[in-house]
Amino acid sequence: MTRKPMTAAPEEQSTFEPPRTRTIAGAVPNLQERVSRSAAALSAARSRLGPISDRCWDNGWPNPWLNDV
Amino acid sequence: MSSVGKCSLLILQATPFCNLKCRYCYLPDRDNKARMSAETIRNTFRKFLHPHICADKVTICWHAGEPLVAGIAFYDHAAGLCADTAPATVTVTHSVQTNAVLIDDDWCSFFKRHNFRIGISIDGPKRFHDAQRKTRSGGGTHDAVMNGIRALQADGIEFSAITVLTLDSLSAPDEFFWFYVDNGIRKVGFNIEELEGCNQRSSLFGSGAIGKFKEFMTKMYSLCLQNPGMLSIREFAPDTLVNQNGKFARPANNQNVPLEIISVAANGDFSTFSPELLGYRNPEYGDFIVGNVDRDDVLAALSRPMFERLETAIRAGVEKCRSQCEYFPFCGGGAPANKYFEKGSFVVAETDYCRFTKKTIVDVLLETAEKSPSSSAGHAMQGAFD
Image 1 (cartoon, rainbow over the protein chains, first blue to last red):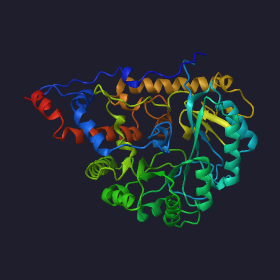
Image 2: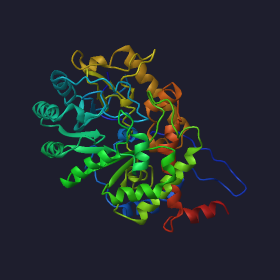
Image 3: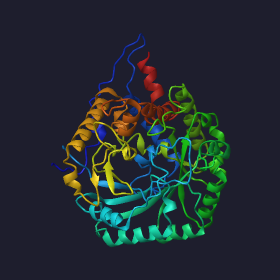
Image 4: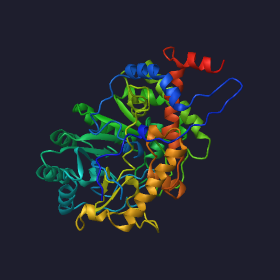
């Protein structure tokens, strides 16, 4: 058995090639491009929401599994 | 087996029994009053709180049944066994996910004594909660839950809440937001009513509810931004979405990596991947049980053919997500239990669960950002569409 501490971050693993449909108006940006273009606004919103405590679950709030309870 | 992770979340079922009968419950064995024995608790800690198996920080979450029915003496003893067993290099935190109806001053003293983290299950305002979360005789439980919450608050004990959303609740985001704020509930995670286990129907699936869900979450996000600091909502904790490089920054999905989550039933049976799988049977994977803490060596149990088949199928399902889904970096390959319970297979990509809890949340955060004056998206998009 090979034991590894953790898989690599998903963002480093994606092989998805988003469809690049063209319209009369031009190229539709994919999801990653949209996130990149809105990074400043997303960060600003995050700051506005304030700190999110990890008091309830030590290994990260939200705990991904508890999303599914 | 290609790789295993290190356990950071150990879910322990003190008892399968639950004192409530919620309409959407997925647990198959909630009439069973069995309780985890001291020997099984000791073996669980000895085997899973081992530096070769667990991470430096481990959360023990008492769950899967109503944990508080096991009683304070049970947890006093378990906490003592844990302290005696855990290596000095491993930091253990206890948490409990409870319906709160049994919480009183004695429980509050216990929570403080052992520094337990508390998660409360409450489905928002009384009229929504009582329609779903019922006593065994069919009565509402909201008043009892609020009594438990007030006991925690009187003792200064911090807690978070989990709310299950059903179709009816989606029409009232303002009512939900102000219910939490007015009652001092500061942290909430929204689950959806899922098609899972013995809950064979969801009011949300197949009903066109996803648009209503999106409107609900969009309004919730807007209320949080308009009233900063009043309410933290798990879905908007957006380290979830973007990192310093403007790329997706969701942590790895620990439901898809063997051993990162370990679930132990009251009788010592243990499983990994999605905790909801424990207790169900399938012709191909048996009962999803990897082994038993009282009888088996953990790593040897992972070499069994059933586990190899299960891991191979779950990994194939993740690969489908990776190759087919633009949202893969946000979720890391979905939830095996939802794939299985919705589609009957692990080797699938999109589920209704994904569409609600992953894709829609990303869309809400992103579309709100794109409408923001501080977004460059508007200008860039304008250029793209010239």
